[in-house]
Length: 178
Image (tube, rainbow, N blue to C red; front, side):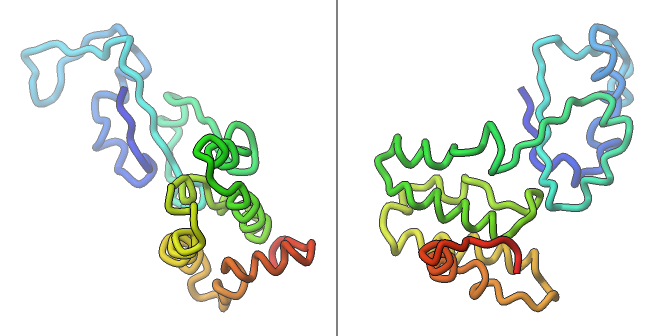
C-alpha cells in the first residue's frame, strides 16, 4: 500500500509518470522511460491511497486523468464514519468526553464542513487535563484557524477560543458562523 498525503499538491503527471497508464490498465506490461530494457507492471495487490484537504482550494487542480483513475471518499468530522470518532476514542482511553463536545461546538461555529477541524487534533492523551487541552488548542487549533481567516478581520481567539466556546455552550447557543 502506498499512501500519498495531500496528493493534490503534487505535480501529478511528474509524480506518477507511466504509473498513470498502469493505474488504469493493470496487468499490462510497459517499458519505463528510465529503464527501457525491462518490462514493468503494477501488481494487483498494490493499492494507492491519496489524501486531500478540501479546505485547500488547490483540490480543484486534480485533473480528469486522476479523477478517472481513483475513487473519491469524503471524510468530514460531523458525518459518518468520523462522527463521534473522538468521543469513542476518549471513552476507550478513559479521558474526559467533553473534549468531543468542544470539537463539535467548534465545528458548528466554523459552519463549513470543508473547513471543519478533525478529531486527530484532540486524539492525544494530553487532553486529559485542562492545561494540555489549552496548549493543544492554543498551539495547533487556533493557529490553523488564524491561517484560514488571514486578512478577513476575524478575532480567532474571541470566536473559537476554548473559553468563548465554553461560554456559548453553557448559554446553550453554540451558534454557527458569526
